[in-house]
Image (cartoon, rainbow, N blue to C red; front, side, top):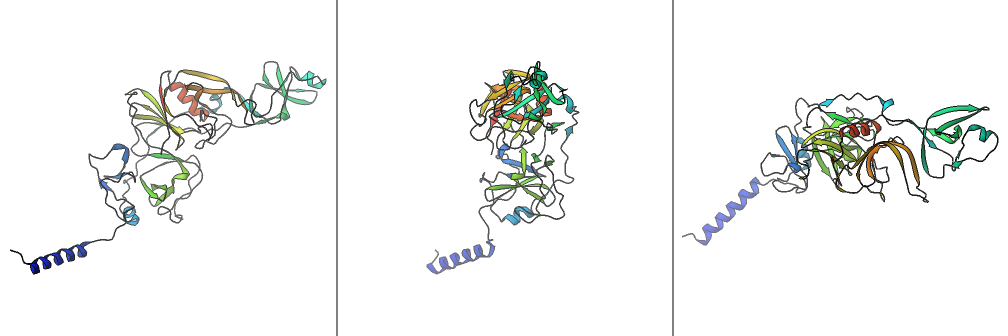
Length: 375
């Protein structure tokens, strides 16, 4: 039988062993673990032969320091390229008209320039608000320039301001992406480590430049993305596309996934992503509704207006490539801004004109559209 003295020596030995082999750790960060079947697909981002879990999916992790985690990152060698199908787009053919913004409140509209020349009253006025018109032609009468905006309607040229539509376009994918990818939203030079100093050897990435994301590291309440060797950027600089599984209702059919947090859109056939791009969804107060919908109507071009008798009244002529999926909420081309990747609309999903045309031609009525909040 063990006596009290022997039991005491055994306890001392165990405690000494624990102290000798113990290592200090931080419990708020996680290390990579080998791929295991118990992990959910939505929690994992592949990095070579290892898998990284979402930082909030704690089960199965060993806590270590952030420095240790970053040191253990191994990028694929060589870095894989995103397989893209070249899309040839004639930018002059993606919008059905030339457009101009009305720069003068209550701009006059005449049936003919001669009416203005003789001081006759206009047939109507264009009102006050965010108003855009299609321009069909130009004429000069008695030395004054006018633009024709509709049949039998002319406005003085100095009441309009012209704008060149965005030439941005997303990507058609030759195969399902192996990694998340993103567009740069504003110029950024990466850091050598998450939340660290700028890496002077790294290139400066410009707006609309496409990058792949090979690892993710949380710092406070924000995420940092590894886009190349010693190249980390904050999530605020990108609009990210992460492959998603289809909703059960979709099955293997074609569907569109809209991510409001990332301001991105991806088109799928079943689980295979075929196209992706940036969007501009509804501003706060005009939020794009969440849910699963189906395309019920398509219009090549048409007028859109709203917020009557309010300061934010808008009237837009000949909005191109509209795909209606939730009553009057549509995916459509936006010729009046180049802010894709940021919220900008009154509830619809704005697309660059080239993206809108691609989706319009790809999407039949009945196509599923999922609008999700995202992260």
